[in-house]
Length: 232
Length: 232
DNA sequence: TGACTTGATTTGTATAGACATAATAGCGTT
DNA sequence: AACGCTATTATGTCTATACAAATCAAGTCA
Image (cartoon, rainbow over all chains, first blue to last red; front, side, top):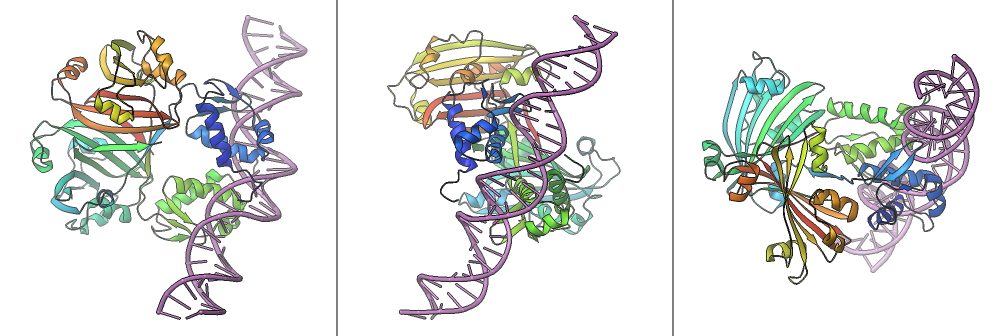
């Protein structure tokens, strides 16, 4: 940007600094956009953008007519990128390997049908597979695909390509729900992930929909050593 | 907004729809801002805002000169709000209770000093407490506070107010790192959280800094039934 | 061939001005 | 006091215009 012009980033950082250093205490009403614009020698739109971003990251709360105040409880949100597992592994410099465990087409068990909102008569494709990093078990993937919504999955063997990778290029989705939890490894999970039975697992679950229509439900289990980290 | 004017939200949703329904396949280059602006009868700035938001949510990738293309692997990021535990509990309609377990001032153990980047001679405040929902153990909090950075913590007993709540209003931070993992409950955790020893726990860890200066390290352990959910 | 320059293109950002919208405060009426 | 209207005010958003920055491609020169 040209010299004299002040970036919304600069404003954002300066405002963040004032909040962090208690120039403006939590709960305080901070000056209005016009005032700040004059102070920084910028247009109101520029200040507005800075403030909107601060609001989205949870540092301030804004209300029409009342103004902008420093958030009382800065419950800043954490953002995690959910990568394709293969990329995640190679990004760490490890060798990625994939193994298909089973692939069956059947009517869904009640639990699965309920979670996905399917009737018990609709067919689902059940795929179980293992992702390995440098030969060590990294993730056990247990997936159910709604064949009514994704009939093309019937033609795919999933022998060399993981269902995740296949789905992102063949079955779009518009909504998703992520869940993370801890669980104890059952006999099979223990064997597959090379941990002892009952050992803690880090489990991620995801359901995706395309305009209300359920696409797939996947449970991804990692050995307990797995860590999900983010910085903000 | 006035009748004729088209909101960036409308544009954003329509573009998202086209991507979800494969009007524009993954990897495809989508029309430039000017073209879209003409199509929607909006200013380029409006289209720009819509596209920027789509880019941030990971649906498209943008590059100057090349243009905007539909992301090949929509690794859409998941956003989790990290609330104050008390609010989280009352928001669920449960009764919140807090119990202080211990509060000591001492030199940090090596592990903690290393994680926080402190010298072994600096004093830290070690607080352990329990958060309960409707009488049942909800979270075991094990916290270390850097007294060099937050000397005021020395005066606080933490008998009725949790360290988290106290800190957000008394010790600002500018950076934070979140980690989530699964772990097996040790004897003490098992007793406190009312699970059996070795049972899986869902553990969150957070370190915060104010301009490079470490403020606090906290480990928050939940019973394995705990779920962290987000929708996008 | 290969390194450098230049131009064209697309997104990125700032601005001034206008109007929209939400929420509040104050007033008047009952 | 309770209710509803109105004016006020701060944020929210759109437009038109301008220029900045990145980057790709083609052309130039050693």
